[in-house]
Amino acid sequence: MPKTLWKLIDPPTLLLRVIWDGVPAGITAALAFYVSHQALAHFHWALALACALGTAVLAWLFAQFVLNGLTRLWPHLSLDDRLLRKHVKALTDLDLDREERHYATMRAQHAPRFGGERCPVCDTRSPVRCRGLLDAERLHYALRTERRLREDLVRLRGRESAPETDGPVDPFHTTD
Image 1 (cartoon, rainbow, N blue to C red):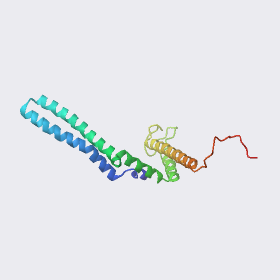
Image 2 (image 1 turned 45 degrees about the horizontal axis):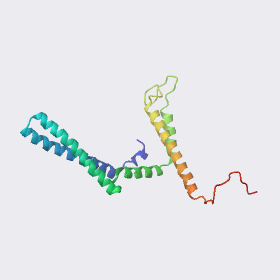
Image 3 (image 1 turned 45 degrees about the vertical axis):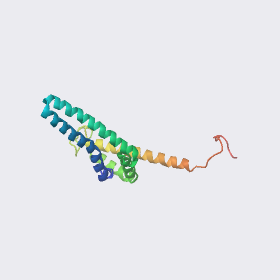
Image 4 (image 1 turned 135 degrees about the vertical axis):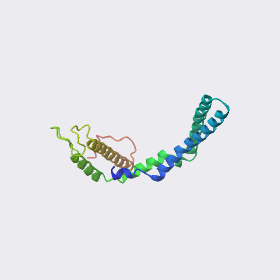
């Protein structure tokens, strides 16, 4: 895994994700166990199973409703927002030229020849099935996309700093 992907992993965010998804699961499991235990003590096992499943679904829905409400009250708790900020920070820290050199190295290492030679790393003859070559192409696509996004950002920042005009600009107007 390239080192740049490790920048996208944020242990506090992962822990928060585990807790955020674990709370509904824990509530659901506890209530389902309690209801099924009570139903099994007094009724048939099939009814106990139906009660447990119904309780699990209702508890999960209620927990999701509560967590969504908390996210609306305090938007900074939103995991998607935190992950997006972390992802943008990691992308702005990328050195695109270094990553493109890494892409070229990967492409050179995993180069199955069409003459029937095997890839020296993956031991396959097909360029379509060469894992390293596919990873290199994915990296190349991500780098192209990132470069376009940065160019768009520079272009948008240039528009923001451009002087305002009083009316529509005539492209054929010359000042000569």
